[in-house]
Amino acid sequence: MTEKTAAGKTTRPSGDRNLSSESLRRRQRHNEKKRDAILKAALDVFSRYGLHGASMDQIASQADVSKTNLFYYFSSKEELYLSVMQKLLTLWLTPLSEFSAAQEPLDALKDYIRQKLRFSRDHQAESRLFCMEVMQGAPLLLPQLETSLRELVDAKAGVIREWINQGKLLEVNPYHLLISIWATTQHYADFSVQVQAVCGQTLDDAAFFDEALDTLYKLILSGITPD
Amino acid sequence: MTEKTAAGKTTRPSGDRNLSSESLRRRQRHNEKKRDAILKAALDVFSRYGLHGASMDQIASQADVSKTNLFYYFSSKEELYLSVMQKLLTLWLTPLSEFSAAQEPLDALKDYIRQKLRFSRDHQAESRLFCMEVMQGAPLLLPQLETSLRELVDAKAGVIREWINQGKLLEVNPYHLLISIWATTQHYADFSVQVQAVCGQTLDDAAFFDEALDTLYKLILSGITPD
DNA sequence: GTCTATATCTGGATAGAC
DNA sequence: GTCTATCCAGATATAGAC
Image (cartoon, chains in turn purple, green, blue, red):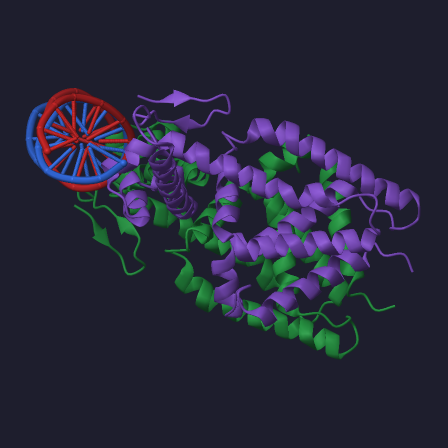
């Protein structure tokens, strides 16, 4: 028996009556810790095998809980997948929100590129899962891509357009510029196996990370920096 | 009853004795046509749902054959997937093979970028399938990525390095340059749903294709063109 | 909350008639 | 070559004891 809170988060009654608030809190902490462990394992497994390829068995064993117990915390595979994706989108949108017209354009773009490349290094699983979701037509995220993301991008494209009008950047299509930044930075996470096969290294090597970042600065910024 | 030829391609006897070569040929043509229809459907379904997510049922119905019949042509799901991937890799490697030290560096790079972007427009399913395979650790393709692809890339990186030494290109890491070209061009295929959500257009719009191409020329080439 | 046992369904694959 | 019927493994999900 489960209920949905206003926020849509699933909670369970767990016999709250007749318990000291002390042991109640302990119980909730334990509950939260397990949920997090499961979400972490789910992210990892989903990102490697996709929604269909992943099995609840696999996720359970990686989270170190029994399969039955897993179903106690998340009543279906879809609910689990949805929870994972929800956290993911928030994380994915954050860096873009931060860049603003107040900054110097070259600084803002450099910051953004560096942040996205760090994200690729530190959140490979998230990046791959996002890629899979989008490649499959974004059945879950499409509504949010068409609203939240689109609005955000329109706003940031406006900022870039303004910089161009002020002569602080050379003429360039803001949308394709942003797409190029996403593409190049995310590629190091999504295609890390190929990068590793070809270069023998990944972003985890600090030197390789710096090479990649320098190259991106050079390619992306030279074309739009006024003399 | 099936046998493997030297090339590893599965063939079937199909009662060759007592048939005129005329009707034998007709039979082979029919056979080939069906195989192709299946491969086409398989590419499409695999590219959208991945190896595990795709079902033989789905592929069969999309290829307009019964499931049993599908198993007559490809004796297992893996064999079918393998056949699809084999065709894919060849196709994927072709454009890179073509660029050579004989060309002018900027022409060579422009050609390559244009070809890759066209590939993204004309072969979305192939691009996505390749992406999925690599994201899942390239279980099938890894050996070839580590040999064929790596050798090819080393050779082309050598060409670029030479151009730099001759002063025809500014200093740049050839590997990261190639990776950036792959990333940006492939992104328009793999993330076309997101691109569509944000920009309302895809590479199928000729104007949008040209915008994308111009932006890529500007970004990638400005950083490495000598004054 | 956690476990054992089990219901139920999907999907890959095969047997055998035609 | 194509079909009907069927087998079987693996996966989601539930029941009920503790």
